[in-house]
Image (cartoon, rainbow, N blue to C red; front, side):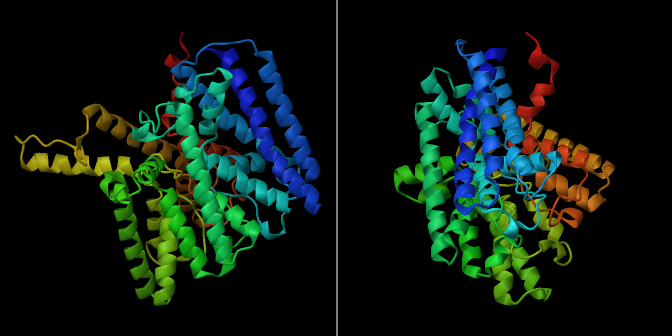
Length: 482
């Protein structure tokens, strides 16, 4: 374990991260919204802390091991979550405690979208922008950006990329060099954000709202600059634009890259995971829209609009709202929350277990049932034309098992913190799936959750964002042995 190298990397990344507080500081100065001192102090503390860590280990030059990579990724998200909380804590408005500030910061960086803040419409413009920007950075994965920078400074980045990239796409690179891969991903992400912002602006949003909501839409984060979220705009067109970009951002950026390179959308329909992801969401949209209409909740047109928007929002783990789906009739609120367990595709900005894992589990279940009917048959498990190796199936089942065990333990812990069973279930699901809004006490805000509960949910957010094993592996004694 190269702790000096790890400290130097964390220090370097903290200095880079401190720059994210510069733009909100400029906004605070221009609009004189009262938050300038908070951002100046937060920038200074973050930059100086990073500088001390960097200078103290400046002469260390060693290649990172895989274990180092896991530790850097875990520490990076945790440390950034703590330092990212400084503006929320130091600003007079919204006036958050330490626990609430860390919760808001980690929720933003992990693109969860759960919030403890009410009265968003009255917040300083710099604080609003900072919340949105945190989600945008979290969406692309600040580690991926760092991977493009660190090799230039003499630090290998492949281990970090493998530790950060979710699911079965870990060993796939878009370009031969990891720096090229990170650059391609970042440019695609930036372009998608710009197009999204333009679409929002043309649909009637102000420039500030358009840019702010494009950050959280492409990041599949769900933070908004208004308490009413997307419902503030009272525009079906904006809801449909949001749905389209959330759906697009929930697909693998690897597939987007291949579509762009081949100049053909056929690549989407040749990918098994993308087809499965679109099929599940389509079935859910149809079911929810029909039930909303025949239950008399909305008119036909509104049933279709809200059925599409809220289904895509929760299924991709964005968590935007236009109506309070927690008061929808019958099974719908719980069904909507359950959609978040699948989440987006592997290699997307979405949370959840990822569509490819859910698809593999479903295929494995079907294969086992066929095997019962035909015991002597050899039935291979395939994704598209490719046979899935047994070790991949084993890894997926292990992931799903640990994911669900973690979910159960955290749900019980939240009940021990005072939440009722429905609120505890939805708060845990919304946090570990990086989705945001829940049901019951946490339908609108998490402010009523105890401080202990907030810290537990912060852990759940990090657990979900880092794909469970990246964080849990640090608890293994074998990880720390020489």
